[in-house]
Length: 94
Ligand SMILES: [Ca+2]
Ligand SMILES: [Ca+2]
Image 1: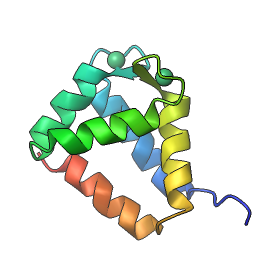
Image 2: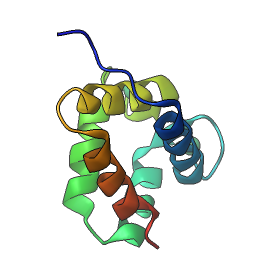
Image 3: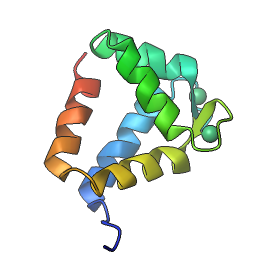
């Protein structure tokens, strides 16, 4: 099955969230930034760490934007965009 592309709208949304999580603006998400984001969202730290581990493909402890986008793109092959939006809403709820 060919890889499913994320819609432009969802990509824009994902980039906005990336920039929101990347509080020091260095273009990568570190463990701390992810934890802060998820703690503010719902205190769901274990879920944050699960996401973080699956996103960090090269295991260097940081999530680059490319790794982040690749994670969501691979997720798009398994779930619908609506489900991704639901996930994103849990991040955006403050
Ligand atoms: Ca950062
Ligand atoms: Ca990495």
